[in-house]
Image (cartoon, rainbow, N blue to C red; front, side):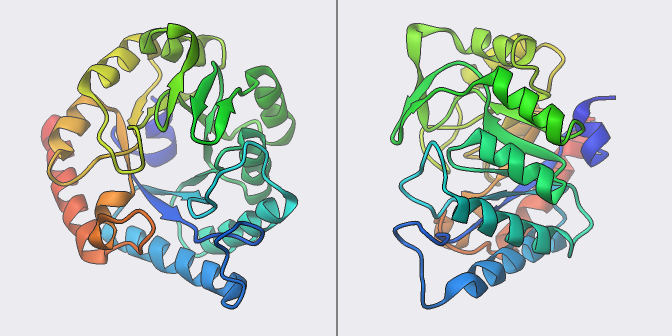
Length: 269
């Protein structure tokens, strides 16, 4: 049994993103609307995803631009509260990411009893928010001390460029062999951008038996290709109103994608 079958009870899970509006302390935070707006947004989008039939949901502080490599206490507190309240409403597996602080993600994940976290785990990358230099040894020891059962989905590409010229296949292999990742996750150059097919194939070669997730750019139009190349997908931008990452989930688009993706998944069996 793969880690995906264990968590989601299917071989190719379809996961939907719940993107938080800017949280307290971030430059675009709506102080007038306060935490209630964030809670309402999370609940509305999670409900749309669950009703559409997604196999799980992923929470993220997407609105906290520009992102921090070390988030503040307010972010940890706000995310913990909203994820705890929202996840308790729905009986589906859930995980989270914190842009761009893997240790905070693990700490929040343990507090809210998440099933998994999506984080940068190993190797070194450079992105719009600077150098991404995770410490796999420290992160995995923190996870073991707080929540040993929580799974780690390791980002190996996306929104960043790996330093040192190392091949993606080897980064994937290192994330699993050295970083002890339970799965590897790829993304495009920006939120909503499609992942190159060659990158997905290279990740699969390097990841061995660990699942490979397509983490951005999946849509109704490319669902068959992405599901044939990846072991699971994470949906965000393409099921939002206007395909805008920072707008709400469109329930009709979410339902349309699930109908299409589940039909493809059944045929791929």
